[in-house]
Image (cartoon, rainbow, N blue to C red; front, side, top):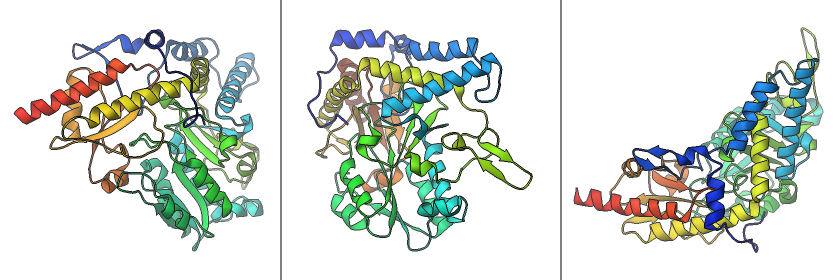
Length: 432
């Protein structure tokens, strides 16, 4: 990961404008104003290359991958597997370590249910490493997206294991002193986010990974907010599992992925079962394919995978280090500009860690929905609410926040537009 080290220069204004030309939706107007799209943390926009790649597959190759012997099916299978290879290279994995899922939420649940199935004896002796029971512990953090919290709550309920939570300090940073105490001999899995979807900070992943592995625990990394924005190498980070969603990284909805170490995928009982993931079936039992196909039951998301591969190629062509540098500048501009407004509190502003181009904030006396509506009237799209992270908001003493999140196609002027919009919003409601 390149954040925190010397980085190349951010994009020039001319470079950003050239990038923006690749995204048709950015040329539209909303409520009579040019669209200022600052909600990429929820769903990013797609360049023409990605749109065209999915359309080309649909119009020339559409067929059932891994399910036919005719030419079209063979070509669809090749495109599907080429997409897997492209994503594997992008995240620093081997191609047989990448499992296609519908999204990151499904990927996390896949791991949770593999542990659960192993705990009731599925997978045989080989899966013993994944079995949980009373006395075992799962560790996550207080800043997690609900998708990286609720599956572990449910796994603990099914197995009798205990869920432990690393707390936050008053600024919102992980308390690493508490992490050192919580991760111990009983810990079997540590699951945490690489980049907070609320705070925008890059967590000290190397320390957490080292602490987990020191006690023999496995690590799952939620890379939804890092894979689109910084260079990611899962082998170099030494994580055991990682998850991501395509729609946050210029790709379509309905496609995500799980990375898993090959030796772990080989011992994991499947989550979803049915066609395409088996070798032999009788009326009483079945034998499963090796991973990753073991975890890809049913008709797969072939056109979406092809489109996501094109998104990966687009990001690689632009350059992840430069994207990170660009967003770091925009993120600092967001935090500084919003923090300077009277009555605005930027969540996590005091955390001394690298950050991506994202800031969530609370405006004293004005509900985040009102802030969002005011901005939307001016064509500025932001996210409002708890961002699927209620425990984090509760810890910081707010019920909701407004989130502005940038990407490679955003400009400094757009950041200034949201800062000015919030200032006008404050003035409007105070006068009202």
